[in-house]
Length: 64
Length: 463
Image 1 (cartoon, each protein chain N blue to C red):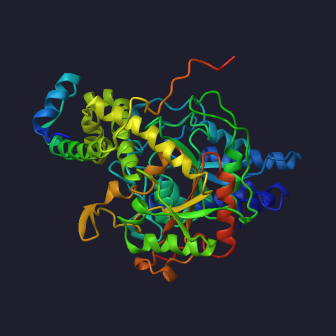
Image 2: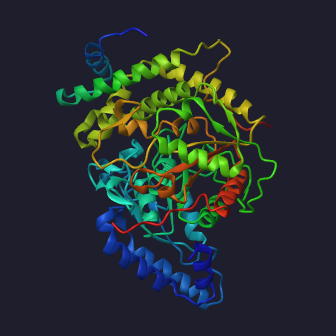
Image 3: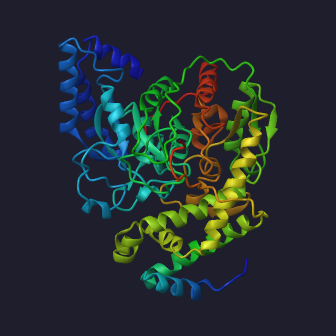
């Protein structure tokens, strides 16, 4: 997991989403993003195969 | 008096539902200002429902197994005519609910009397019920301490004796954490068992609803009444009504203690509680839940992303109206790279498959419910293994890896936390974890623990 600059990343992504980020909220947002980055690194530490499908499974309708 | 005994007294005409209701309303008026469990007391509704119960009894009609029993619900359940707050300021602008939520209807159809709505962490995103809009709910065992969350108002109302049964929700631990910190029973059923229709969502993939009670028999009674098919919950996988029984028959059950992730990161009382329960059950083997920490990390990311997506419009339009404790997490959740969340959903499926394999070898897994007893209100950090860590996210360290794969859990309170040596004699609980749909097995183990005197709601000492 790259140690990218969250202070640069957060306002850019927020702008892309049209999400206004207030100056006062930024320290808390960055702290939580840093925590999420640690969690993502933990998730990434488990190697998965192409056969590992995501947990939510779509069902077209009840089987006839 | 158990709920069944109270209902029996009302059904037989020995007691009037309206008298019980007036007694509860007076008690709530006198004592709830200290505990801060209720955000709304539905007194007029309660009086009308109680009068209807008494009228049925007078007419020779059975009002049901919860006849006249006072109940209350976390304020994310729809109550007809009341705005569903979900702990927020924002939803105060929402129109009143048009009808009761499914589980509320189940309770009232069984004769229960609805006393009101209970405090919670905003939008259920927290483990402490220190709500910036409604104030903190205070733990009945020590009012300087948190009740846990996010269903803290529900757990504290039951522990304080304001109501015998309350409903809560559990996305990452929000029934099991406050049940542990308040020293009462709670059940987080299998994902998809109980309908969630008519409740405010948080993370659709993880949201569960369930009851709290001081008496195990009351918990089982409520759990049985709440079961029912509901086409309006898209995630319900109704297996038919499968009632819990308290026959305490556990011969032949294979019970093991979770090690690894569940044996570190907490204070000694969390592990002592598990050891006492394991000893009583004769459980000598341990089992490793593989990738629990990584599964928890996946749950953490999915929660952030789903929660943020749900509240995006308000995060854009009125971020200042969120509770500061949830706002920054929601905002950060909106910014997660898609890859992180998708990888988390793939790992979650792998993790579930690995854990399900364990149930070929064991029937019930024991784990701590919380890493420590209730922290002080306002306490941000707590020392674990010589390191100061944040209180709030770490309260769910043992619950989060279980709910994200939907396993049923009974949270069982240790009967004698003083003998256990917990700090201040404060309560703590243990998770009894089963395979999907194995709630009946968990209730049997709970009944055995109650019969042995190991698990029960410890009495609340006077504050």
